Length: 194
Image: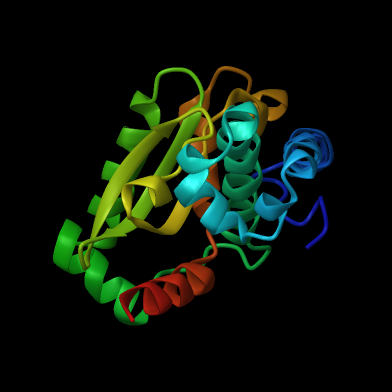
């Protein structure tokens, strides 16, 4: 989708800065790291995230930070859609109701958890041992390293919202629900439960 497709909830300015500067820097730095050890460049990004702790020491931190930044942001773009105000349906809806009572309760818990993240990080809805749960991660960490399967993710780094929402993270989180890609979340849930 285009940079302006999520307006008015997420501005074109944010999407351009976020994608072309922040995400691109993670991609570029990840590529530089794997040039030093080409066997790591042959792995999928998910493999890199899950096993970076076994990487050569000289690229381990770059794989964690830049690989994590690349992976998390790649998912984040997919978790939003210009088809605004989607609602969960199908098996993911059943699982949300089973775990959180109803969609409104889920959104409230997810949003509250996102607001509690100190500094920079991510809020996730994941499959954890066959059921849904919420996970917060700092910096560019991923629930993949904990054996959890990401279903939905929200970026709460300041660069994700500051140019539009300034220090009003709560307004950004509320606005984000209008562009959540529930079709993608349902697909990820179906694949993750297989």
